[in-house]
Structures are given as C-alpha cells and as structure tokens.
Length: 261
Length: 248
Image 1 (cartoon, each protein chain N blue to C red):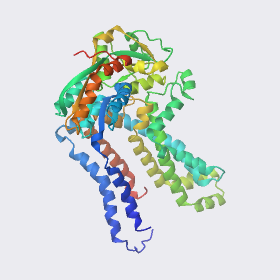
Image 2 (tube, rainbow over the protein chains, first blue to last red):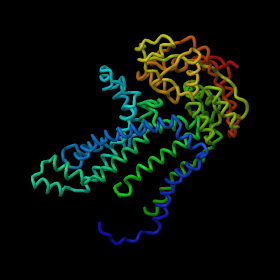
Image 3 (cartoon, each protein chain N blue to C red):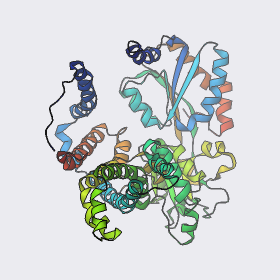
Image 4 (cartoon, rainbow over the protein chains, first blue to last red):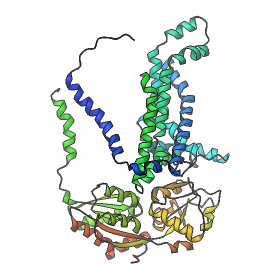
C-alpha cells in the first residue's frame, strides 16, 4: 500500500475520540484497582476457576470450528452469488448480532430443548442436548456465527473477483479456484473473523445460562462462574473477570498487528 | 440543524436526570419467591397511601444484598433467609432490627403428569433423572443442601440456578424432570407444575425477614410497608400463597 498524504483532521475531533477511548479503558482499568492482589494467584487457580476456564476454552474452540465449518461456505455464498432473497438471507444471518442473547437462549430451548421442535425427536434417539456441554457450544455458535460471516464476507468483497476470473479463464475448476485463489487471498480476514468468533464465544453468557444451565465442569463457563461468584465472593469474581480480560486481550492481540480487523 | 445537534444529544440526558419527587417512591427489594404476594400487597399499599408509587425489584436474595451494598437505592429489603439478611445487617445497611414475617418449606416440583415418576426425596438421586436445584449461595439452594445432608442423600443436579424462579421455569418448560423449590412456588404456578411433598422438608424451615434499609429517604413509608406485611391482611395474603406463619 502506498503512503498517501494526510488531509489535516479538525482538531476538535480528538476530544470526543479520546473520550471514547477513556470510556472503554477506564472501566477495565478500574477493574484492576478492585483486585485483591494478595489472593489473586490462589483465586484464579482455584479448582472452580480452572474448571471454568478449561470449559470456556474447549467450548469456544468447538464453536469456532463450527463457525468455520458453516460460516465460510455461507460467507462465500453471500459474497459471490446472486439470487433473489440474498439480502433477506444476509439479514437473517445477522440477527443474533442484534438479538439479546437471552432471547437466543429461549429460541435454542424451543428448538433443541426436550420439548423443542428438533429436541423432541433427538430425545427419542436418546440424544439429549439441554444441560450438556453441547448446549454451551450451540449457544456460543449461535451468537458467534455472524461475526465470522461479516468479517469474511467483507474481506471477500474487498478482495474482488479479478484473480478468480483469471484462474477460471486458465481452466481452473470452481473448487480449485476457491481452494487455491479465493481463500488464500482472504486468509487474514478469515483469521480475524475466527478470532472474533472465538472471543465472542468466550464471553457468551445470556444464551448459555438460559439454554444450557449452570453446572461446574459441564456448563459453567467462566462468565457464568463470575456471575455466580459476584454476590458471594466478590474478590474471586473480580479476579476471574481480569483473567477473562487478559485472555480476550491476548486473543485480539493475535490478529490486530496485521491490521486485519 | 447543525447547531441543534449538540442540543439534541444532551436533551435525553436531562430527561433522565429526573426532577420527580423521590419521596413519593418506595423501592422494595425482595426475594424472588415473594413476587406474587408482594405484587398483591403493592396494590393494597398504594391504595392506602395515595401518591406513593411502590417499585418492586425481585431477584435472588444474595443478588439483592450485593446490589444494596453497591449503592442501589432500596428503602426496604425482604430476604428469603436469615443468612443474607445477616449480611445486610453486618454491613451496617439495615436500619433497625429485621422482623420475620413468613416461613416457607421446600417441595419437589415436577412437570404436569410427573413423567419421571418421582415419589420421594430419594428418587431425586436417580441417575436417569434431570434434577435442577438452586446454587448453594441462594437460600433455596442452601435449604436443598441442608435437606439432602439431613436425609443422607447426595444430589447430582444437571444445573444449579441462580434463583428459585429459574428452577421453576426449567421444570415448567419440561426441561427438567424435577426441581427443588418452595411450596409457595408450586402453589403460585397453578397447573403448570405438580408438587410432591416429602417429610424431610419439615426439618428445614426458611425464614423471611424484612428490614428498612439504612439511609432510606422515607423511613415512615418503609415502616408502613413492614407493618403491612405483619398486619392481619398482610399475613392472610401470605397464608393464601402457601407460606407458613413467622416462627420467631
């Protein structure tokens, strides 16, 4: 990318911009001031914390995998094909982005719960989803999928189709074009989309507590544990909140330097 | 229009700032299991105190104590157990001594028709049964733990919920085969759940204390609410809902 000369910005713009940064940084920094550092180590390494962190990471990894499995084809279809109702499909897919997660949880319950539309039949096969780690993964996938789809579709549209046209004109089959040209070109966008989906999964709370319940080791992820502890053991809740902040910062830091977000 | 824009941005803030007279509002924080009875009494109180608007906030008792400790403006706090009331008193947030106004006992709630065939407390330990209880931090959870301990049973719930109403909701929805809730919850749910009483429940009585919160703007209004709970009419509302009389 060539460096272009900057047009001067109006000075007053920096004041609200700075306020916006402070608005995000201040609460996170304030969290750190509430930490009981003497017990911090033992609080974040307690059995309950480790079990919740482990569960959070495993379920978030699984939901990110599901997002990739279904989100990559979906984003590609949205970016590269034309059919009637495409924009309607896009709107529907983005729904979880604006829906309160608790509504997502109730909707998932109506679908995969024991009395749910699909759950009823799954139950007949002895497959139970509610109150299991699978429910956690489904809740996370539901809320995270739009993050991956939006990032990837944006990347695909920015990359354009010219290389694909060239590859096709040289005789490459559609699958080859997708595999050798399209996806490699949008790899940074794909990576940032996956990281965003992972981060969103890690923070999922509303849909999980509604749909999956809360039990240590099975469904009590780190946000649920924090919610549980916040009234009985504020020190532990704050310590684990900071742990979640650190994990989130690390996750975002993984892709941010490439400027892909 | 450009000049108007900053004004438009600020306008909603002043609207939220509120100039209404706070003295005419009584904010009552109450345990989730008191929802129906307190809503009933709210009507009565407002009829007796024209111009006073009662605002009710329901949640798990431990949540409410934490909110008050964090500066939530409550005038009255009604807890579903002594433990959480003690927390408020210990934090010097109670104005005066708490008064007990009702008691409650546990019961097994099952979906209509009792699909899992639950008959006794011991049935709740069955491996094929989806049991939901309250987390040990909330009163209904600590009562469940005490009952289990007293009976020498060990429950393996599929979920530990943050309030008794969450447990009830999961049973009502048919997601859980059984849940441990209060007698009053089952009564209040009508035919959406069935209750199965068990003898061990009598060993654990849940006490409901109420107190005015320290620093309340209107101690008289707060006391009037407490008096209403203890009055003959108030007690009748609790009896009708399935609560027991105060033990103390």
